[in-house]
Length: 194
Length: 137
Image (cartoon, rainbow over all chains, first blue to last red; front, side, top):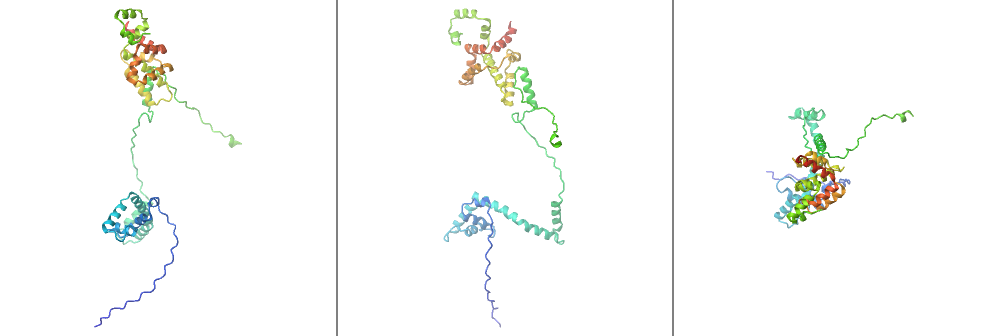
């Protein structure tokens, strides 16, 4: 009976990583408004840790919050406070938007693969989606806008008529209304002729 | 010019003599009720406000409605129409009286000596009183 275990292939020496090109990526204003780099790291870690129970604690640990002796309860408290901080919430909202926007190329790739695969169950839906966006249907909306205007905002004809009526009744001399310049526009072609 | 206080403190006999010595205009002012006196002063002030160029339309309408609402069977619309806007001197009196608060200011406008001063400054008030008393004979 052969009991010999399969021999492990010796690990080759790891390839040296080429130094990263400096990427001048800039954080958004909400991220920059966070008080420390650890807060920023916490927000970024929220997108990298596996979602689920304890994700926020893990993100807090990755960001460097707590100490090696911090109890799980302490870490949970830290993570909870961080994730309910208004500034952190605003930064998360900002990162959400960035994540969605940066996912657009992948979504477009997936969509193009979908519409090129006639056997896919959502093939027709994908085509319809593209057509909706390239040749949208015309829709007519009837919108009724109701304005409630008070007399001090708009001098309605009724108000002015009532004022005129009462002023005449009580012989009140109202100041003259602002002068209107009346005239007819005449096109001046003298410059064009000369 | 007699003040209200002097008239009230006057003995009956002296008051009778004083009343008989009054001119027609003075008599008509005396017969005019307190409410009508200050209402006419207020109307004159309102007409001054209405003549101001920068008065907002809403206020202008409110003032005119005020004239309409406060004119009555004695102080008719024709009489109100006769009242002229208050002059600068009269308006100074109004501004001083307003410092007492509107209620006391109205009482002040209606005082015999004060209202007579308004009538002297704005003769249209007297014309309006005469117009109102026309039907009384």
